[in-house]
Each structure stands twice: as C-alpha cells, then as structure tokens.
Length: 96
Image (cartoon, rainbow, N blue to C red; front, side, top):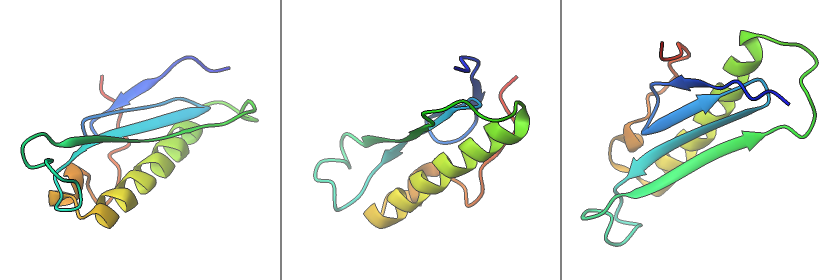
C-alpha cells in the first residue's frame, strides 16, 4: 500500500496518496451549537481497499479532488461560514 502522502493547502489540513486522501476544515454554523465559540473540525476522507492499477500524480489528484468535493458538499449542507475555507476547486499543487 502507498504510504507516501503529499500535503495540500486546502482547508485546515489535507493530504493525498495514490490510495487515500483526507481534507479537514473548520466549521462555524448555526446548525452546530457552540461552533461560534469553538469551531467544529470536520474531516472528509477516503481510502481504497485495493492498490491502484498505476502510479503517479493522476491518482493523487483524483483522490484529493474526491475528498475535497465531499468536504465542500458537507460544508455547504451545514452552512459553514465561508464554506469552511474551502475553495470551489481544489488546489492540486502539493506543499513543497
């Protein structure tokens, strides 16, 4: 299983590898009592049960895109202020 992970400038913390990805973000919302004082930290993640058929950036990008899309949908559903700091599209450039 791929253990090499790239970190991204998405939300509070984001990483992706060829078989996994995760996006964490902070949410302040009327639907989450007390989050105005202590923002909720929400994580969207995925992990594939089997190895990818190939290697490379395209798998990391696809995994990050899926994790980001799920996180953004959650942020919008909860009404998080500023969509939890998530952009409309993921920044797929890894942190150096």
